[in-house]
Image (cartoon, rainbow over all chains, first blue to last red; front, side, top):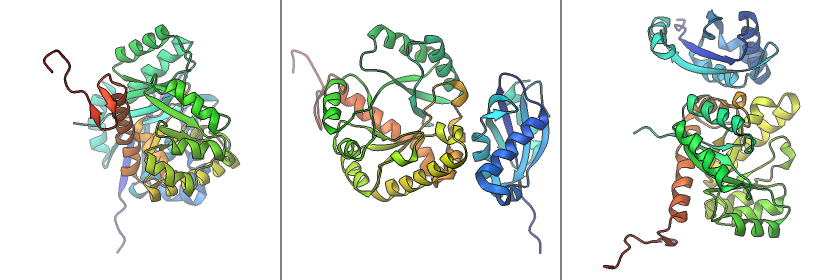
Length: 110
Length: 244
């Protein structure tokens, strides 16, 4: 029988003087994963962007729970988004999107 | 009580207070409890006091650190004589095998670190690890180059660091994870560093120790030694006064 896919939801803060566009953020994250782990590694992450808040500079990313160390390492290794210097800081990791959303106000403020 | 995360290697331009302040404030924001700031041996006392105050205002414990870059073993001994009683942490940049062995041998040295950009200049092999483990010296790994290097250089650096981590673990040499950051954009959260070290084969538990317990131990040991009550190894003054 197929095992149920377990996922992790990551709340990440984008630390950049100019907030980057969604596409740039996605590209930066994916290219960091590919640079560090290759295309095979990237394929195992099952990565997708769930939410991107341009104004408040945060993003919610979903990945496979087994690939969490890969995604977190790749996030820490991002130093540029688009053409601007940037850093991605992981604020919270959760097993369900509902739980993550519930905690957002306490972490980011209302 | 939760152990504080410690970044032992911040290297901002000490004379530019604005830059120092922004780096310290960023460290506090990212969740560090203490930061090691690199000073030159001739830094003015008032400058040090000003930076200490900035740290305290930001809620951080300031740690005074000196980085020595000796040309040879004799040079290292001369430098150590001058700075050991002034700074809380002494780190030695080992640019040659001779310096690496002497630094590992000397009990006054706390940290050994190697070139951040040239993986060929890493001289941490079994002989240095063996000596370092006997003398309580630790291996410092600066993580900024892992973030900022690209392509072949990063591949080589990852390879060398993975080997060093293996050697250090085998001989029981404590590993210290530091940022080596000179600007706020180079800093990451301690938890992010823990996951970044996944790339060099350090497990989560060991990485957490390398960023909290191991540096804490070095600081406590050195602060005890630098206190007025220290007499010699194992002997401390516990009370002063006429009635003693």
